[in-house]
Structures are given as structure tokens and as C-alpha cells.
Amino acid sequence: MLRISQGLLRALEESIDRGWFRSGELESVLGGREEAFYTLLEGFSLGLFRYRGEDEFEVRSEGLEILDAWREAGRPDTDPWIDSRVYSMLRAQSYSPSSPPGDWAEILSDRGLYVPGRGLSSAALKLLDLAQRLERSIVLTKSMARALLNSPEGPARREAYGRFQPVYEAMGLVVGTVPLAPYYSLTLPGRLLRRAVQRLNLDAPWPSVVNPWIVARLEKAERGEALEPEEAAVLGTIGYTKPTGGLSYAGRLVLEAVKAHRSARLRPPMALSPREETLLLVVRDLWREKEEKSPNLLVGKEEIAERLAERLGADSGRVPLDLLHLESLGLLEEAEEEGRTVYTLTREGEALAGAPGTGRGAPAVAIKALTYPYALLSPHTEWVEEASRHGIVGTGGPTRRGIILARLSGARRFPLLTRPEAAGLQRIPDEKSVTREEIAATIESEGGDPWESLERLETRGLVETLPDGRVILTRAGRLLKTALIGVPTGIATPVYPVLVRVLRAVEEYGTDDVARLAGKLRLPPGEVKAALTVARSAKYLGRKGGLTAAGRAILEALRELEGQAPAGGEL
Image (cartoon, rainbow, N blue to C red; front, side, top):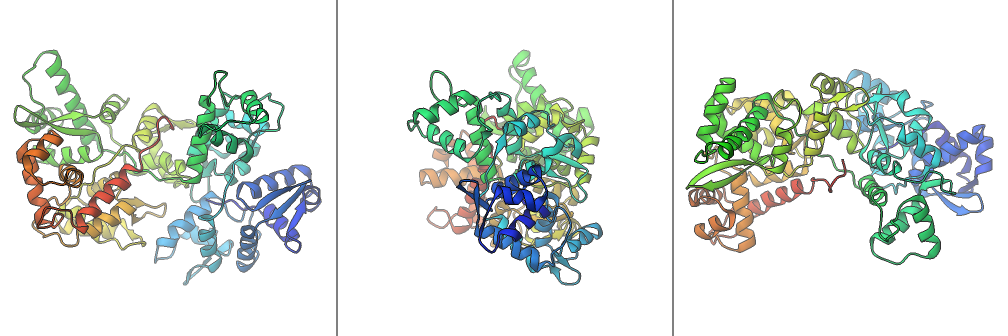
């Protein structure tokens, strides 16, 4: 993301000739010490300025690139020129072959970033490229740290973030909603830093509690390298190390924040329908019944379907695919008991089953009101309102249910695609967006439920709905799309969790022997044999039993989805 104020642009323009400036000169240009201070923090956090000593700051080449782009855009005077919501609009529009929504077109055109009838301007494309290359930093003065303590997690009204909101936004600690930013939220780095600051000594005799110097020493301590006496004194006094040695919890939180800041990842939302959430509750209750009074009860498909029908009158024919879907989300797993396949809740499934309000369901965009800011992206204002309607957010932040669903959005996924869903995936071009209606029509023409399938594709991490309502493939989605090119049309479910587990076992153990794989995976031999049959028919396995390029693409998609899982405790 980016935030570029008019003050920052003036500072760059004033210093372009000699390539450096003094902070005192900036005060004269901008009309005051506070304005100069904010602009210095903004430019420094974006990696546009480098302190070279004795109150002098060098302008880096990226700063000149931003100035050139602004001039190329026609020197627009909107302030800020770019902010988090405008950046998210640019990102979405960069995928779209169509005109932006009406209010977007005006916002982008006023900034010289969109040309009606032609698309994004060259200045906009340069900014999108530059945003990926900036070497960002975080600086928290003690005043900023105290203000962060009083900032809500969000979504909340802009004024709740106080006078430091523009600087927080420049640092990637908060984002506003698209298109007019009535709401702001802390990003994942912002949330982690807020938790860290709660444990720091804000009376320490230094002006800042987070800066590049401190981060470098924290990383040094994390590597187990010895600190110099002065370094150890600074970290210890602020509260980053324990008296007994090693990093404190606050120190580890700051390092997590820095890592999240450097490599933000968008996680697929853990969004389930009321029926799917109720199915989880049914599985939980059946296991409780088995443990408490019916030890011979098997929690298989038939038992689950019967109990679900009692609760909802649901169509029992949909239960097998529902179970596959929940298994692909890491909420259920299969095992063998008395020669039959049974289903158990994973740790993540137990957490969701125990969350308040489970059974009411929530659409993907409601969860994305929380997960988009975690990835330093601006959600749409309508997503926030949808989250409020579904009990995901309350006043100033997520509800308990919202917190659990956001945390579970980082759960490991297993690839799963039915034939209609695969057709929908094939409908989306690489690196371009399409409308939801286009994908839905393709899925429906193949006999699938269009809107449920779209929700499931996003929940599984295979597509992303952008703030303009259009849809793109994720990297995992592109990999599966490639893997499915040679699959015969007669296979109803060409990718499913047990199949993926079997492919991974074939890769790991170098065999396609049914008995050995069944033992390693603790699955019934019949299920393993069926998975191998599909794998050979779909050309995921070659004649000699090894993985083909398509099989390797499926496992690469699995690794991509597993890589989205969060580090422990970061939410």
C-alpha cells in the first residue's frame, strides 16, 4: 500500500536538485515543526529518505520516481494524492479490462491515475510497480505508541485513530475502506505492535520505542548473537528482553509485526453457510454422544446425514460434498474405524464449533472486512456493513465470533474442486478479473450451484473477490487450473482432500502400493485405491507410478495454501 501526501511531494520537489535536505529547511517549506515531523516520518517509513547524520536526509531514487509519477499525472492537488483506499482501487483496476465503478472513476481521474476510455494512466502503473519495491520501515515515537494503545482494532470511524492516523497509514499500520474511507482498521502489523506496546516501558529515556536500529538489534538477539552492552541496555530498559536473557514477549511481537509488514499475505476467509456450520455442530455432538453414552456409535456419512436432516430438514444427498468441503478447509479429517470412514473435528473445527453464534453462517466478504486489513489492503465499506449484520464486527472491532473466524482464516487448506467448480476456475483468465456473474453462469451450465460454489472457491483460497466485485485467480487457483487441463470430463470431483493426501504420500514414499499408503495415511484401503484410480485417469500419475507435471502442480497448490497459515498467536 501507499500513502503520499502533498507535504511529502513538496518536500521531494524542494530537495530534488541537490538530492538532500535538512529538517529545519523542511519546517520552512511546510510551515511548521509538526508538519515537517509528520512528513519526515511518512517519507522515512516508505523508504524515500535516508538519514545521513547531522540533521541531513538524503532523497533516495524511489522518492524521485514518485515525484516523476506525480508530475506525469499532471501535478494533482488532492491531499493525500495516494492513500490506502486509492491504492486498493488501483490494485483492483489493474486486473480489470472494464471501466471502474462510477465513484472510483472520479476519485482516480482527479488524481491523474485513470483516463476514461483508456484505463489506468502510466503514472498509476508506475506507482503499482514502485509499491512492490519500497523498503519500508516502522518508527513509533513514545507519543505515537501511547496513541496506538488507545486506537481501536477496527473497523471504526476515522476520528478514533487520532492525529497520528495519517502517519500510521503511511507506515501500513491502518487502512481505510473503499471508496470514501468512513471506516479504518488496524492492519496485522498495527495489531501486533499495539499488543507489544502494552508491555513496553514508555518512560524509557529515548524518543522512540520502535525504529530500524531497535529492529536490527532485536533480529540480532533472535539469531542468538551477543549484544553490545549499550544495545542490551536499550532493549532491556524498553522491555524487549527478559532479565534472565532472551527476547520478551513484546520483543517477539515486534519481530512478528516487522515480518508481517515486509511480506503481507492475504488469507482466504473462513466463511461458511448456516448448513455447513450446523454440520460441524452435528459432528461435534455425535462424538460427545459416542464418548458419553454410545461407545459403538460410528460418526460416518450416514449418521451425520441423518442427524443433520433432523435439525434442518437438509437434503442428505448434499452431505458427502459438504463433508469434503469442510475437510478441504481443515475443519474435519477422515479416519478409519471398524473398516468404515469416520469424520472427526480438527483443532480448528473444534474452535469454530465452540464459537458463539456458530450455525448462523457468514458470507466471505463479511470475513474479509477483517482479513483484508490484516494484509494491508482496504476492504469495501459494504463489506464492513455486511460484517456488522452477521455479528462479525461490533463497535470499534471484531466480536468474539469475528476474532475466531479471522484467526481460522489462516487454517491449512486442502485443494478441492468439483467438475462445475473446475469449469468456473477455467473461466477466469490468468492475471485478469471477471465478473461474478460470468463465473456463476459457467458453473450453472455445468450443473453446479453458482453462488454457493463461488463462496466455496474463495473460502478454499482459489479465487479472490476484489473491492470492485470482480474476481481473480489466486496463485493456488492458477496452479489447479493448469493441473486440470488434461482431466477427462467424466470425473465428478477431479481434486479432493484424500486424493491430495495420497499424491503427497506417493511423492514422499516413492510408491503407489495401496496397502502401504493406506497404512501410512490411516485410511481404508478402498479409499486409497479409489484415489489412485482417479489420479491415473486424471493423469496426475504416470505409467510408472510417479507424479506428472499436473500432479506436481496440485502439490504445489497445496504448499501455497499451507503457506498462508499464520505463525502462532499473531492474531
